[in-house]
Length: 343
Image (cartoon, rainbow, N blue to C red; front, side):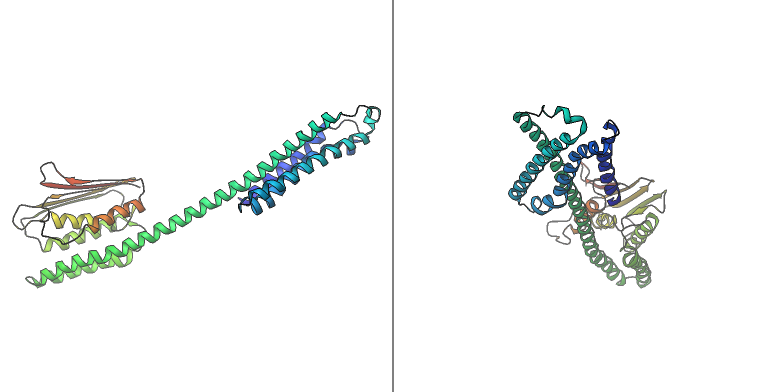
């Protein structure tokens, strides 16, 4: 980018200093004519780089606008007067103008020419200032974007560390309940937990994992939960992973599955849980339905932290690229949570 900027500067000023050669007439005094013609681009260049390299960074950007305007005014007016009289004197020295020296411009004409040159130099001063401000804005936007990305990553890591204890607490409670009445199943549960822990400890620290690994993780969790459920609870799972290596944020759906087991199972009423996850090359859809058994007013277990974390993780990992529909059916018997993520 810096090389391109230098090239553009060189190309522009090369054009400005070489183009007068096409207007030179005659051969005897071409150097004098060329010298007269390059006086204007020379003063333009001085004005431009005075603003681009010094006045704008030193005064305007620092908020010293009065000093910036005052110095610029003195610079532009001085260079405009110098430019006019240098050109006038140079023209008088050209051989072709020796017979026309009596046709010197009137005072009002000289003032007009000086004002014209001042306006021209002022435009180049404004361009130099505008370029500096545009570059500063681009740099600040880039720095802001990097800071926002770093803040997002830090917040996402914080949410990950919050999910781990939440998930492990529920799992350990399940194992504790299982050891009371079925030791072999408790051992099987510990094996399932070891597989889950491997995913949590190693894969979970990555920003994304293959979809197949995430589905295996969810299946292990569901198998673990099914061990302690009565057989009257109907569990239906359907994982249709067309692209196994499709990257997805790790453990993005686990809180929804936990919530389904937490509110979808009743010890006295018919219960069911349906988990349907389907992927394509561009989208992941997680559709979970369960029988709705809301907590009683006296049950204060849980505070909805898991669902809040899902919402925040979706905002950080897939901003503007997801939809989340959740809520009970009109009769209140079925609760649905459906997340669609565009990858």
